Length: 215
Image (cartoon, rainbow, N blue to C red; front, top):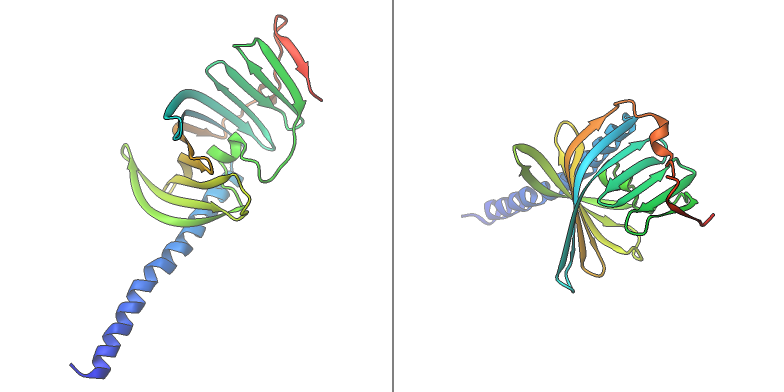
């Protein structure tokens, strides 16, 4: 084999090997933009999910099932076993059945905070995405992305998203913090633009519940 032909083959192999990585990175950004576009076109939504938390150091697992309702802007209601968190974008109510107590506080806007809405429906801006591959969730085809925070001081080490191709809805989220705690949200149903009334995002405190106002 001539030297020129050999060099040409090596160059071709390098180009072929390098091309998928470049394409994957570009696709990851494009997929994330599709998720954001889908979110921007969504007025409100209702998600039924299971949250599983694994504490690696203590070898403890916790699992709860709940629902998230959200509405623009900054309105959401999360309900799971014995807990209700509601905000209308100005006030946050956090109710605990075990203490029969509701905490009231001002809603604090922090673009870096991972609210339930951002975790299960939106796509954070302050993360760098990378394409991982494809995976089936049941019969559903999803694209898996790994997001790394751009802030080196972030408490979150990484986030993985399973995105339903075509619908561009998030179907599973996996969060890993710096202490090794892994939190997984599995989305069972995702309904959008159902006309959720604003009243769902104001918590009506029952008469027999203790109130602690932190405002």
